[in-house]
Amino acid sequence: MNDKKDGRLPEIDTSHFECGFFSLSQSEQFLRDRPDFINLLHRLIIELQLEGQIERLKVKPDRCRAELYREPENPWPSKRLCLEIYPDRYMDERLLRHELGHEADRWNPKMLYDPAIEERWKLHWAFNLAANISLDARLCDGGLGRDLRLKDFRSMLGEDCESVFEEAWTNPPKTWPKIEALASKLSVLRPQD
Image 1 (cartoon, rainbow, N blue to C red):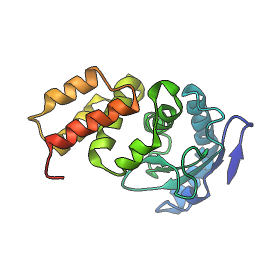
Image 2 (image 1 turned 180 degrees about the horizontal axis):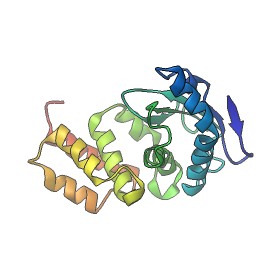
Image 3 (image 1 turned 120 degrees about the vertical axis):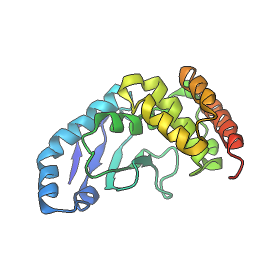
Image 4 (image 1 turned 45 degrees about the horizontal axis):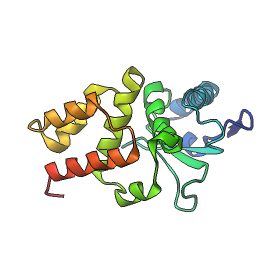
């Protein structure tokens, strides 16, 4: 099913997501929740000032992670995006705000986005961790939170480097070049990569 609220808000395609449930009852529940899900996405898009920056959002299920991305045939600055999300967390406002927050960081001119930075660090744990710390520290209670980011940090670097986390959380990088600098620092702290 597709929904388009107006020209500034994206068409939301949930047809792939609707096929991702384990049971018929979960699928039926999503279909009942779908209007609220679409409204939540539109509200967050407005909150994050992304009106007009996303024209189509394809929602897909993923049991391992949540991610907002462009498919290879629609590279930056395409306004056609995919959102992969856990089937049991589609109404998680903080999770959705976090994922859409990464896109808001790309469109914010003060963040100095350069797609080459993301390409250099594609799928690298240090860049993902640095970007997530930066975003959630700036989102405060609206994001996924300090506890989750500290847990992620510890899982990658252990507890010996927590002062680096504390500094990054207290003074989060506010530009893509500074996020890249933090990623470089993190990758040096775990040289086995």
